[in-house]
Length: 227
Image (cartoon, rainbow, N blue to C red; front, side, top):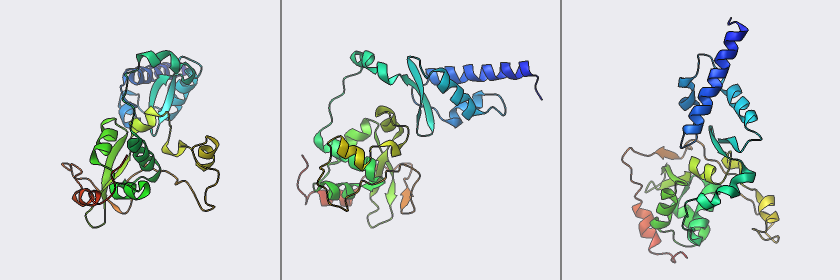
């Protein structure tokens, strides 16, 4: 057993190492990114909890994004940094609708997105969302044509300040915010989103898979154009 003083020194060093790694990181870091730099048998969960408490009332907070962690500006002070934000072109209505459908229905194929929207979804719309780092190709559906399935990314959670995808607003919150009509059908429901591992009807992407979906491209030509 380590003497109390030595244990305290090791604990202090572990906290400083975590603090430095997370402060310098451009993206949220997970356990596999952090453990190699800590002492043997270090309790990572406890160390992260200590850091979260240390910065709870500071100008920056340690936040969780999925299974990863990052330092971010305290929510009540974020307005101070808006002038330094890189101006981003607003998403089109089609892109916003597509992003919402992917977030709530993932894993979802392009044809399934089109079924919900009622119009064709161009590859360009999906490209914009993937270039923003909010949408990713997950795999391929085990159906004829093997269409690509899409889901959200860690960047999506980070940008919208979500710890988990399940933190997306539910039916009650959407109605309370005025985003849904109060006169919805009795059986109307909001899907419970999940961004986990591949499902039983998904195959993994190949290393060189570009995500081309010929059948969806052909089907899109026969549907109304998106707006």
